[in-house]
Image (tube, rainbow, N blue to C red; front, top):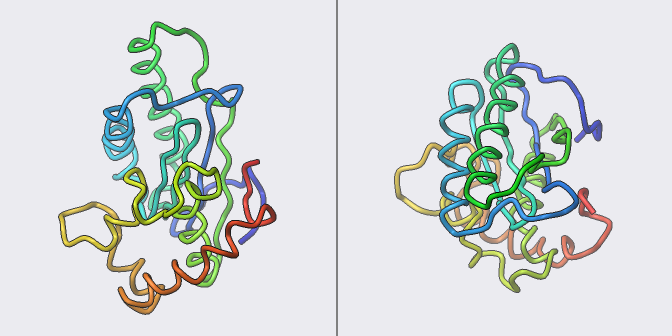
Length: 188
């Protein structure tokens, strides 16, 4: 994984994108905000990028995508952030920027980094001491990847990276201890 927080987007490349609330403030105020965020993300982004994993926390988010249209994805992400920010500002009677100025992204260049990024994203709620068992966190893609429910997540590909469903579960269990270490996390 190449650490360049503002690397350009290229078609057919994977990216871990993330951002936090301005001044570390909340970006999700109600449980409905989480589902609204995902619906808006789908509306603005699904035509230009595929989604593989995500985790939404009260003051920040992480999403793993593969860009399918480098020409449009940046402008669509900008429209997505503006749309979500406007809705939250209206809901909470706030003004100004909801997110930090620029969202960060890192390009992911190999299969082992895709696995590591997925594990990292799913373990984020434990790192931030929001929950002791990340598998129970409802605002991440972990359960959606294991579910048989209809989803736009690229579930099959994620499970293939891990070598199947059982390996996906096993690696998440094994790596959780490592990912509790401060050195692993990017956004602090």
